[in-house]
Length: 213
Image 1 (spheres, helix red, strand yellow):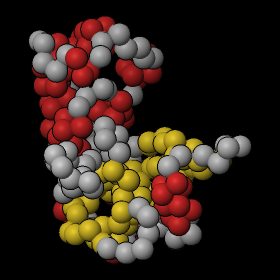
Image 2 (image 1 turned 90 degrees about the horizontal axis):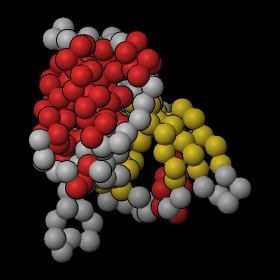
Image 3 (image 1 turned 90 degrees about the vertical axis):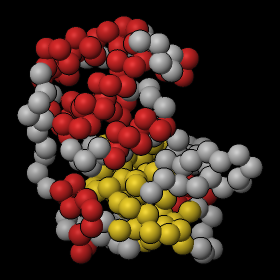
Image 4 (image 1 turned 180 degrees about the horizontal axis):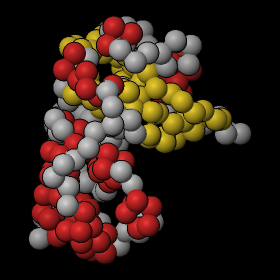
């Protein structure tokens, strides 16, 4: 399932605000709502086992929040069940997609028809960032983590390859959903790193302080 022709035209959608999945990355999730428990059970019956992670947009007075146009699909690669019936899963990022339209049907969860064609490079080789200068990048990162009282394994981060480093930070840093969407839509790893640095600098200079704590 590594080529565009193998990817399904319709996938289930999990609109979880602030949760970001990127290609070749892994996202652990804790599933407890009944409709999403059903989604996981249905997903495991399919050959592709794909779920689309996507941000929803807040619209006053709307019962069902509209979706952003671009999301990222992950393959369900790990699953366990707790004694009280909750699911602990891991999604492995396969490819971003563009939403064509929402599919109406009888499932309790949302589904969309999707187009994969703009993101063929997501299924290619790991990306590099030729513009990454690690010393100033880590200096900014340490200021950001200190400011927001975050902790990490600095030795592991410093040894990580470009893609793992940048994508892991994009997924884990406590940015607003719209900021996460900007990181998702970045056309290259270098653009994502530049966006990430801009968001950290903006936060350190007083932008969005309350929401990032």
